[in-house]
Amino acid sequence: MPLLPRRFERLKAVLNRRMADLTVLLEHVDKPHNLSAILRSCDAVGVLEAHSVSLKGRQPTFNSTALGSQKWVPLHRHHSSEEAIRGLQSQGFRVFGTHLSAGAVDYRSCDFTGPSAFLLGAEKWGLSDAAAAAVDQAVVIPMLGMVQSLNVSVAAATLLFEALRQRQAAGLVPSHGEGVPAERYGRQLFEWAYPQVAAWCRDQGRPYPQLDDEGAITEDLPRTLRLRC
Ligand code: SAM
Image 1 (cartoon, protein in one colour):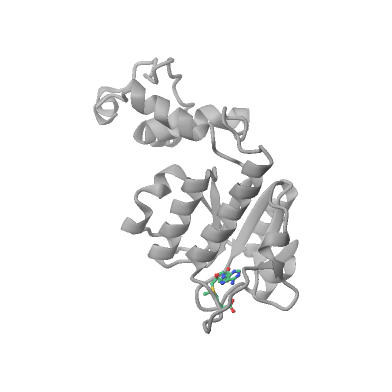
Image 2: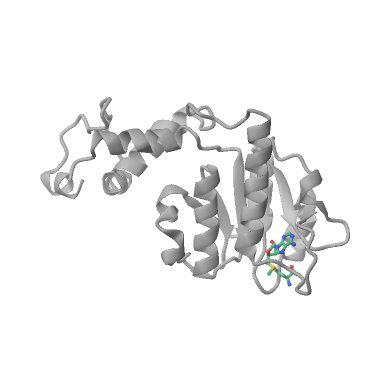
């Protein structure tokens, strides 16, 4: 089935609103329903890509809660929280650790209009000590009830939508693709439009083909691959 021009326009419209400078880093958040719900919120607010730290050999799994969001929000996997946090900080991100500690500040007093990463912890244990020590700022969502913490996906959604609210109020939400680095834009669009061809190109170590204005691939591809498009 070829990509319809209308579908291509929709992919571009969504990519045009993506923000590379807003992300989550999930530390051992392995339950499929939580991972799925968090990626769904990321997609909803316009996060370009998310990050996770998981034990070696453990593949992230999603369930129907995601509604396919994992296709639209790539999840980059890291083996260590410290390395992932340092990597984000070296790219200019301020890493906010969602830590229920005494030093944590109310999330509503923070400025999330600059490059912001929310570090979220495992359901049972929360953040590791090493991760909590490496963040730039510990934040908390104040709660009034008997239970001490929110479900991690609820905490993620609360923070992400606060970041979106602040950016909308400041007129900082992209609308024409300016939130995605130029060299990334075409690559991401191709991966969304033709995931199977993109995977084949990566296996072959070859660049993605060019697309025309209506989203059609401009070069000849092997017949078996064309049938899968
Ligand atoms: N016993 C764990 C602890 O002490 O951190 C509870 C973990 S909680 C169920 C899972 C994750 O959700 C936390 O690591 C944090 O990332 C996030 N979270 C839950 N409630 C939160 C809140 N009120 N403020 C900020 N983050 C919260």
